[in-house]
Image (cartoon, rainbow, N blue to C red; front, side, top):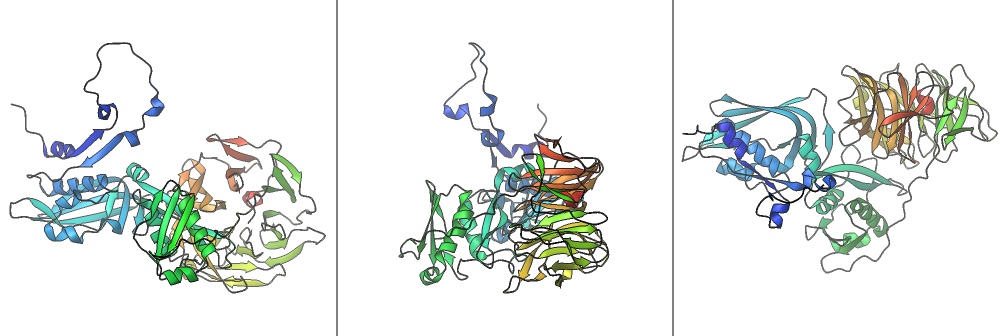
Length: 563
């Protein structure tokens, strides 16, 4: 007699894996004769070729088996209705459990019974996604414990009486079943679109996007941006129909939609749905209303800018890998020129003459002027309104913006209390600022919204949202694109450049042992490293390649992409 399968063997069998391929085309067997031919391996993709179906609880499963089966079923149904998953729950809990409340991305888990009717699941967590699709990367050693309470039903079978409102998936499953999508809001002056990335289950994503737009930006960004979608507007019917590149959206009440700035409203919707395949958006004001005939407002992206570096105090343009002096720009005079930065229109150029002196760079016939003095100034960053951002690493919580005449406005934020700012970079739209600060918990990277007055003067920054929580960021910080930061992190292998999404998981680039800073060319989305010896390396083909004819680059700030 064959031995009875173990509980774990039965549990593994509870998830049925169907291979979708030639069998579904009507094949009934594997040929045993004929010639061997070479196939195209590129046509076989594991993600598309395997469908995982969940199976309900086994009658004789113990509490641990029930919870393990519940976790597997929820993972398999992450883009479904969780009908099978709810079979593991007691009758009352089936309607109470909310899988949409959050998702935990875990690299490992341990399931053990910790009481007569209690099972504990210990997780090594890499990230979390909340109900609105906001992804938060966790610290490298983050642990979380989930507890499940169980009862026996009338037949003596164990069921879960209380389950945390969360779905647990591994990183591979998350990459397969969740889709990063960019929502677009507006700068307060309606001149630019502001992106915010959300992660949605790969099911009815266009509907999820429009609902999220109607709900508005995340709390950390809310006071820095605006939206043309009416605050009381609702999606009715509660679905977005996307066919043949056309997205159909019906919003109620009709009057609110008609009174809105329709060009801006359409711009937000079109840009937010474009990555999902929508080439056109038809918005109807009310179910009986007509389709809006307006054209989406033209909100142009910023023009590409050449990378600039600072060599011996001289500003050089690096167009086509050939360094050439920037015409009309004089040398920075000082003991140790560094921290070159400029506005997008090149009307404002600044640098640090030394670590304690912020100066304007001589240009257009104007000489060098001192704008701010103080110990340990952070490399500057210039926003699109010509305000220069800097900080004093020696003064806890000190963050300031400086006008071209030397007028200084000190900014405050509750979350910076007791922390020293080491690096600051403002986004090209001027609504967000990335900050590396140090405090009792070490160095962290946060992004906050910038609140301005009617004259576009920064007056405060909002609550910070943590990015790159698994890293140890240094003072080198750049915006690689509108939703991604570049940062150097201190690792065992040496200084390691990382691409850090404001919402998402950080990605390491190859380590460079003597790296002292990062640069980024937003026009080409290229990443550069500055070495201690003054060389400039470009990330190309998965490795670092020296930029020819470039030597003597001063430091990280000198090669930081302007603004």
